[in-house]
Image 1 (spheres, rainbow, N blue to C red):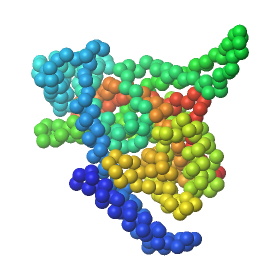
Image 2: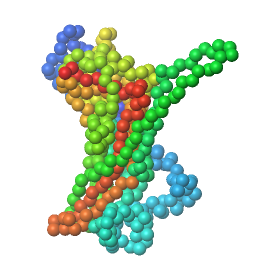
Image 3: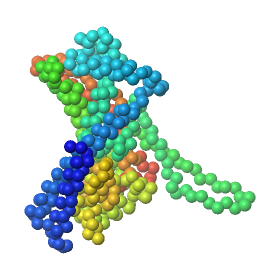
Image 4: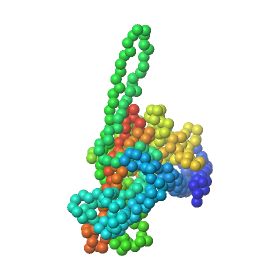
Length: 409
């Protein structure tokens, strides 16, 4: 089913749910039966939205790959398309051979491709002492699996910096908002006000997917798509810990998450629910300069409660996006679902709002996949483990681009 048809299907579900809610007289609660129907329709609408986002993300990824211009050593790649395709095919063949059979049995033509990508930790036997720096195709699959998981790695939401090394990366900041100009009298020297610069440094914490074991029978089965299997398993494992730390990491030997770095707005009056006015207050607590592309962030349970909120004119704050690539909105602002955000319980920071492009994720491009042959040989299995380096922090020069609203304690 095409994206347009999916949107039409979702629009009907939303309209039916809206009619059900509007039929409830003012001041009365929805019956248990109608409430269950309403929640079921909205849950189905959310599932369809996930499918729509997946289809649109696939379109964007394919368009991006077609538009990419390869570079080598800082210069434009002058090779023909056929030469580039031939090298990419050899890279993929070498990597597939490495995954299934290891480096020792690799033919000479593939070994010449693979060795520059091989990273030995110690010793002289490649299959037990090192790992393979994955080719672009597998890296794309891995990143796509990470994007499919959650909010804090989406380059459409946050700023993702891909670097070739893990050296400390300072991000400069300045806050000159308190400085203003002045009228200058005749024959009077202009005064001075210095601009003070700061910086927030991003490191590169090393993360591991932990070990994935595969039976050697499967490895020898040419019909088993090993690359897709590993990209999904390794990518999702890394994505879960990335999203957790980029959301709520405390900055102690890990990234500083958005919840940790955000500034407090006035808290909610209740320990369990938000009001329509409180969502509006949260949005207006962020400076207007950050609000043009700002959004809310919450988990799905919080969204479920917010979908039932109305303003003083009886209009719902939540509106579905029906046009192509038009997002759903709350109070006219887009939102992101992040299941690592806390539930609405006493004292929890369960709602964020602001300009998430000011949250920077630094990811070291090279992903290392190691092939462990001997460790599980008695199980007739080969194990795989991947490593990737990453850090993240909110770049806040003192003007607070993201704020959180906590539930009452």
